[in-house]
Image (tube, rainbow, N blue to C red; front, top):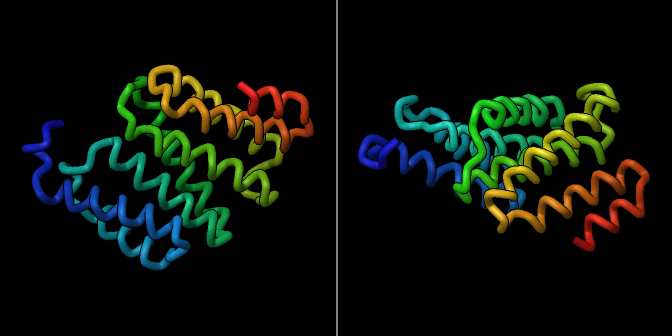
Length: 169
């Protein structure tokens, strides 16, 4: 969609979710949720799939930091649904959705969250990581983080040698 069709409301929503991303990193989660709720209330016609991808990814990360694992998973599921409905792109902003999804999945795994069976969580984490790695084939700047996450998945799975191999690529 063109920027002229998005108008001020779309840019304001984007500014709100980007500010929320910073608030999550600062662990100012109530501020982050307030900004995300404002962004999500933007008129639907100004929100693109990229906006929703980033918004849900940030929200999932915030819930994860709060220890609200069920809500983190629900938001991660929304991110997965968006990713499954888009084609690979070279747009660097999609990095935040792909990386955020893997971060949340890894966080749930490390926390031993009981949001789904352990086997299903491990499988979905590996799938998210593979999608992230595929994305980095078209957006190489994300390759280092994708390999870091792939190594962490191997490490958490008890495969130290494979973890180190991923980390040394």
